[in-house]
Structure formats: structure tokens, C-alpha cells
Length: 321
Image (cartoon, rainbow, N blue to C red; front, side, top):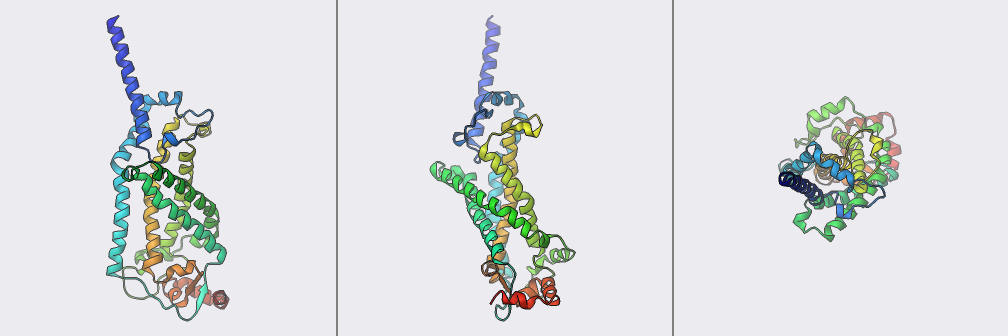
């Protein structure tokens, strides 16, 4: 009897230890889905019987989740936060910005409604990126109310991005389709590793801008989906028609969200550098909608020749007067 009771007590201790460890890891190590702030939906299985049922299957996704969170998440985002700006600082001081004359003719490239959609998305990113870093490094900022406020701003940024997402993807879809000259642009890296002023093969958007667009097209959609899952934290998993625990769905969503964030943040920094520093006056095209003839002739040479051959240059020029 004593032996059986001893075995039973030993097993109970193991179960309690595993249960406590799982809850502690989920509550303390997951910056994007804090249980103490999670909405309590009727019928949610996240913190009920299913949580206990999931313990024996810890090594399926839980172990991977904790390993990635512990060893990779913070170092990789730190590398992006420091490495990408340093690389562009090096580029700026070695090759310098591209400079074009803004005198003479200007052409309307982006009508007002496109600029509005773009700035809604841009505002969303301005909210999302800094608050995303705050959430990831929450413990270094003391946690608490400031991080909860950052999460609220992060959610607002996601809503702004979601509002602009479909219009932005549709309005530029045709112009973003790959073309043969994109390979030439990639082969010469858009001429950004040269101080020589020469014609670059690109239409309305160059290959770099297209890479950014398609990353947002697929990655942005997945970011919105995984972010939504992390926000609601409970849902009807029967729709998936797969045997999986809700906590594992959240773990997969977090890992996917973080992996995409690494790529998108790096490209967002690239987009900022190109529009604010790499090309003097480039940001004006998203304020006024106009680009100078000199800039179009060199950085978007195929597009420039196209509007000249189609004889729509005067019409586009009128839009900037």
C-alpha cells in the first residue's frame, strides 16, 4: 500500500509540475499573448480541460516554441534593429544619396486617393514597428502599463494597416507584376552601389519596390491573420478539421508572426531609407504625387519613355501645376 501511495504521489507531483511549468511559460514568455489580459469567451478551451490534455504533447510545438523564444527571437530582432540601419549608414557615407534636379517639368505619378491609402498604411506601420519592439523587449522596459499601452497602439496600427491593405494591393497590383527588366535592375542593384548618374531599367515601380509589395501582399495578410488569432486567443478550431490544441495554434501563430515580422521590419527600414535618404526629395512624390522629369528619366527610364511615346506626358504634367 505504501509503495502504491508513494508512486501515486510521485505521479501527482509530476503532473502538477508540468502543469505549472506550461502555464508559467505561456504567461511569462509570450509577449504577444499575455493570459492575464486575454479575453474570456464563453466555451473557450484555452485555460480549461484542454490545457491539461495538451501537456503530454508538449514536445510537439511547445518545446520548439520555447526554444525559439529563448534562443532566437530577441537576438534576431536586435540584429535587425542595429544591423540594417548601420548597413544603410555605411551606404550613405560611402556612396551618398542620389540627387536629381527638381526644376523643370514634373509629372503626376500618384493621384490623391492613392497617396491617402499609402499614408494610412504608413501610419499603421509607424504604430506597429516601434510598439512591436517594445512588446518583444517588454521586460527590459519594466513591463506593466507602458507595455499594455504599447499593445493597444499596436492593435490600432494593425487596424489602420488592415483598412489600407486591400485598396493598396488592388490599386498597384498590375504595376507590380514582374517584368523582364526587373532582372536587370536586380543585377545592378538599382544603381545604388554607384555614384554614376545613368538610366536604370524600371517602369513605374522598380524591382526593389516590387519585392516590398509582394512581401506585404503575402506576408502582410499572414501577419493580419496571425495577429488576429493572438488578439482573440480562442476560436472554433473545428473549422481547421485538424487534431490540434488551441495553445499549439497560438504557438504556431506567434512563431509565424515573429518570423514574418523579421522580414517585413527589415524591408520597412529599407523602404524608409530609400524614401528619406537614398534619393533626395523622393518622399515628395508621396506628398505631392509628383516626380521630376530628371528623376523619372534616370530611375524609371522605361516608364519615362512609355509616357513620352504614349504622349500622355503633358496630361501628367498638368496634374502637377
